[in-house]
Length: 390
Image (cartoon, rainbow, N blue to C red; front, side, top):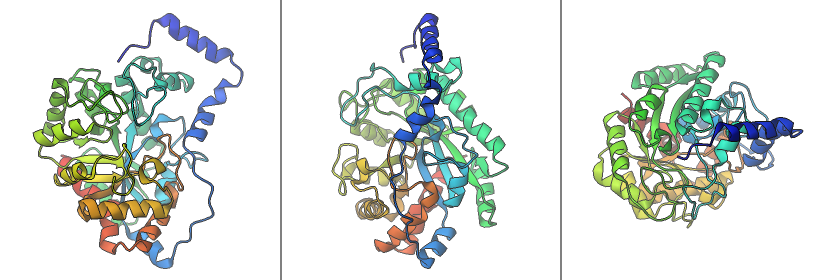
């Protein structure tokens, strides 16, 4: 990661922010236009679907609300995720993922590693601490700190999960009918390590339990699905993968190149996760791994997290997401399909997390059995978490 620049450059940018009228309102404007929910009439939910939905354990492998300046302890009027809306949607487990770098002109086909970084500007505009301006590692630590502050303000409604014992305690509360959400932390791309394996301990101490290797660009660990080529793991990448395995962390290959995924498959024997994606058979786009690679990942005992946005589903309606889930079950089996919304990840959706009963209804309408719905909704995620958390 290139450092942001000299202090003079930082001061000039801050000066510009200070003197441009109205720029103080830019963070809310940016998020409001990046994380839209399409206008829609209320989704009809049958009594049968409502009853089943309220009895589900629901988990989501991927959402990015920590990137934005919202108080997640309060119900928001923009974006997709906050604690009140998670409780309204009966979500038991939410992976909060930290985005630390995003290339200008970001796209699914090709991004240069040294492209201008959007998150640097976002950190400045949102007045993140100066330590985050030039350090991806500090950005990850800061986003973890934000989630811990939400927990402190949540009056017990958010509990950060670090261990299997934490998970057991959360499940006991859920079974007792307590309105509570378990929050986990994941990094979207391991570039916050900044090429230094010792930084993994700092991230783990901050609460991170899932590590994705790449995001939208090639990094020190290897190739991205959206990088300059189908590069595999570097030597450093192999070191990180082995450390993730040894530490009982969860390994996410979403956004990794197919070759990185193959390299990981060859050197590990743990359940792998593709945290937010579609299924190629249903939506033939580069963003979705080929079906045979998905099958290899599923064979590890891992899971494929199905997203809620049109770029991976080809139809972001509840029915379209349910169709993607049904196709995923056909391709990889009912034990390997999970939910991975990508809520608040600069995507437009047709529902937010408070409206997840619409997805339960759509899965019923698509012909999924109750057992299949329970597995997809959260039981498969819970199994993988139990296999990895210590």
